Length: 132
Image (cartoon, rainbow, N blue to C red; front, side, top):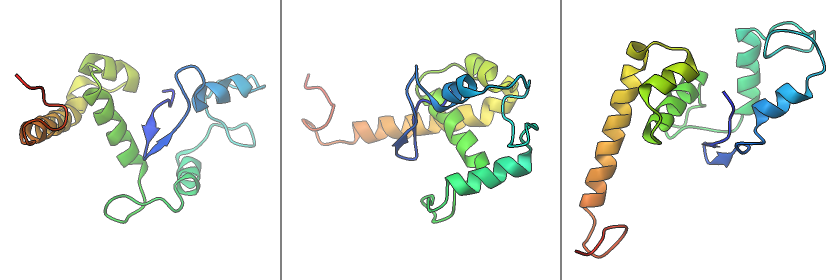
């Protein structure tokens, strides 16, 4: 999935120029796997974990812990749902069944409810609230 969104406060590419597209275009090999290591072998989970640790070095979550791959995946799914991606389309993007995405749909609903309640709780005449 192309990365072209804000992730942990940093912008990673754009729709037309994102890191995944750039990587795929720059490859000069004939290997089938999408991600390969220096020896042109498919990238293993262990190597991906090692890369993740390097990429996230010095970054912490709100709890002070380093972010995990699972958290990034969960955050991305919830963010896509919050931005209006349907469960069916998210299923296509992730390759997951709809039942696997239900916890993310629930979390997205909870976040939307909190945002709505927060907007309603604003002092009249401030923020995005309209005057009727």
